[in-house]
Length: 400
Image (tube, rainbow, N blue to C red; front, side):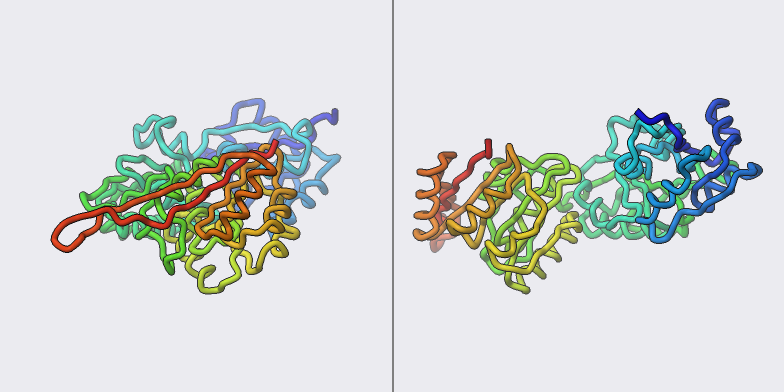
């Protein structure tokens, strides 16, 4: 095991004075310090060689490796392993070579300022990431702490809240927490008009109006929430499909024949950091899927133009696969070969030809074969009756 040579130090607005003595001694003894302009200013007066964050940011690991052999310190904000760069560094450099020195995080400081119990809030970051991904967390009475990406972010989030019937939600922007220049801005989403510093943390208490959009993270969103040409996996079948796909934290889904993207989007909403690749040959449907992903808080949905099975070549191995279109024996075989162990595969069919394929696959591979029938109450003249939707045959199995 290599001895630790790299120290990643969380530093707050109180600078060196806020560090415990042992950590301060590490910083003061450093030969080389890497950090942002703000971090260097917080640790002024130390004679170490100073290095700025490289541009592009992906060059960071090479820059850090160049510090090997010297007493090296990286300065970050707060807790290096909580939505910070420490985790990224630890994936490229053996953690046994690193010593982490956590400081109070922005989440801890913000929770203290708001008087909120930290385990009872959602902690999110949109720093350097699509702001739309926070939309999935807008729920009645939810409390959110959000690391923002700039001065404009609170206004963007205020618009998301207002557009969804959460305009009465209280918003608080906190800046320079723990320092002599700490600032606080309070307001409502529907009337938010503050100019705030670029480096800030946002606290939101979601308040729903009686007509607010309810967008639970449990699968089964209303069909009307999706742009579609009518060929989408409908609400009740979609909920059953996602139950068999089993969304999990960080897991990757292939949505083959993704259409409007409803299954892939609900997969991404259902579990933290869940990823999805939608394979769809029609440009108009890919456009609808992309728009739906932005509107419903899954902006990282990846869309691939191509037909299966050829379009599957070269894609990262999935944890789950949904075949909603393009079903064939060849597509199944290519998908099954790529699926990771314990991966889940679900295929839905509405035509007799596709159902015959599922019957053949079920006979060979086993799994669960079910037929899902849904009827909706609709007017029949002046009365009401049941109108059946096309039944869906669903085949599912787990790769053992």
